Length: 486
Image 1 (tube, rainbow, N blue to C red):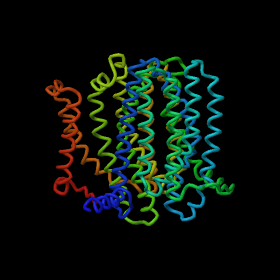
Image 2: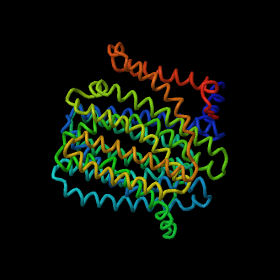
Image 3: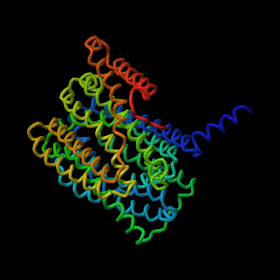
Image 4: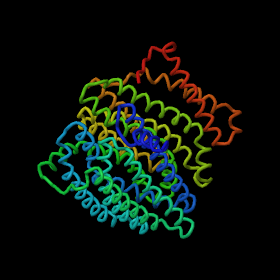
């Protein structure tokens, strides 16, 4: 008898949207758990692939995934962000979802055939096969991604978490079986395809439960409307893909396959560090869109969003830079020591990537997709130019440097455009986590801390940061004029 009321309370907390704070807590909890599980397990699998198959084979695998990643932008076409915004701001958007689903299917088919044609220009036979397989992954995943956008728009993050965790568990379990029984990167690629089919089926049945299953209608006018709205976003996404993927693709076509392995080994670790920021962004985007529409507490939510992102970005950038060599050796092996300098630069870049999410979501919320497209387009052109100049001379280090410079320009231009529409955050907020990050850096730079192994060192550094940051937040009214209202 006691258990039933307890289960009912858990259901209200973790499966229903009852209030602003409870919904934010529920979504943050689910997405944090999902991102932590999926990113951590996927990263562990990636590390084992790199260690088991070596830098050369890992370079072939990541070259193929980077190449198809550039084409994936066409399949998405910016529709995910548009669906989230429209469902939160317009009542008629629900009746238009069938058209959006068919659009995604058509775009997925077109993208697959483009990847298939482009694969004939790849000289490495194994890379060619993996590229085609991941083209099929993009096609199938486009259906799953549609339902993910619906779950996000309705703030049902628990369903996003369930499907993503199931998909990851399938990939990781199968991946380890392949690595320890019959190591083969082509089999691993087929595993990703199978996981995409599974996640699409699961998300479809969940959507049916939420009355989003039967979406068979297609309207040309609605399709044209969504394509027009998403065009600036697909351009900005294409530009983003260029300066995220083009370096590995260029090195691959220039036969720097081993360098791609080293570079992607560093990049995979950095991808884990941005997980908290991604969770924060996914949770806050529908809230920001809704607050902007109603003009209620918009600036407070913007400031809180910015504070959370900065609070995550600073310690990761500082800690990753100072502990780069130890992290690479611990995760991989001495074979990947050439990754260390690239990892240092990419760790600094990760903090800029996190803050770029702030710019992205605010410009989309305020209907400034074209401005964001211009920003990402300009930085993408710079990135391509820098890669062409720096990679032939400095290989993976030139690629890391080009990425860092490109994201620096993106942030500067992004805040310039936010200033023009008067939605800038309170930059004094930065002083709060900055002092805590500097305190942590002092410990990590202390020579006596070098005798501590890497895991305890990271944990102690993280504890110092959190403790100092908490003290600063408690005493902020006395120490600083910064006011944060949550």
